[in-house]
Image 1: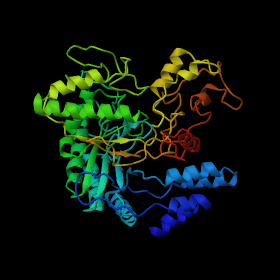
Image 2: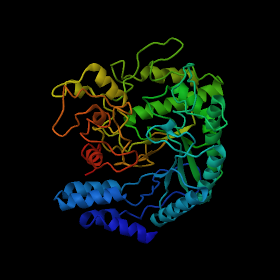
Image 3: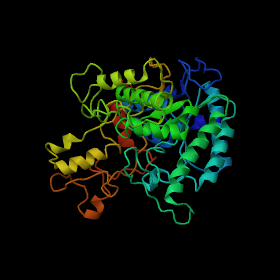
Image 4: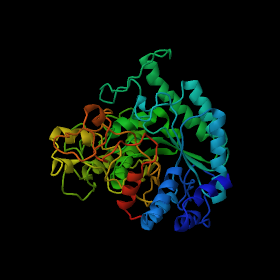
Length: 468
């Protein structure tokens, strides 16, 4: 395992090699326990083959500055994704990572991403075949971790995209997979998701030094009350807490407000007025029920208690929760994915102006798909368990920077484009080819999880704080 790590690092050459190998070993990891102490050292996995290849290309073409920045990105702690395999295979993968982390004297962050009907058949489709298979796979993860310290993030989108689900307002959601051959009814498929996530929480929290966080979508997706209700049903009160903004681009400040409100709502609806998630003030009505005053908060700028714009002011929501909770303190902790949120999300409005000239309806489709390979994205806060926010345990790089979100195109419903208004030489001219093309990047985007060199460079150039 050491030789595998060194052989991959060696591919960066020169300064890049020296930088990646120079991960400091001085600061020790925290001791046993389910909480993360300030100063926790997080594990840095070996660089991906795509990053090594791109680093060599950059050096060969005289772009040493970009190569150095790429090496710094790869030398930053990141999560290790566990996405399949047999129970024995995932156990071995985890054991190897635990050994590598021990050599770094660091705490690994794992993402378990193998739930049945994963991503509801979209770009990241897959997952275990049924509940029994998933539980056996989780057993393998737990066995691989053993008694050593680790962080485990449970099933990104797993509570945001649930088969045959109805939201808190009674609206049927769009995930309706084919259940032929599964023996499940829609109601059983829906209930199974909660059974699976609860099992993951219970099993992994049995490990003496594992901190488990459930996925809570992001501040521009589900309402506070909706995700709080799902988290409680999924077992968040038996876990360390939840993770916000996985693989997304929402501002860290907005994610902190949103996550704090989710924690407040969990406390209100479990300790003060049990079951009443609906009355939790949320980001879509800036004041919330029962009076429904205010306006929705915009995701395209940073929120603040002192903001004078209604769509940026959090003062009303904070005041409502303070009144609702009284002397009862919220206790559910959270972490935030800051791997790509340095510039926040993109409202795509630039494509309405010259030279693109795209219509309002086209821009609307682009905006709805801004979660997919955002061209303006930049690296965000470096991973750290020193946050200054009592319930915020850590900033983490959960999504692997440089990996594609998927083949973002018109065929997948996340891109739209009027090629008669704007095109470039070499762009496709037939409807069939245009349906598979990503005009925001001027190419066919790589599959989900594949290395996306253009996006890696954009993350470096747009990083905030700067990668250096």
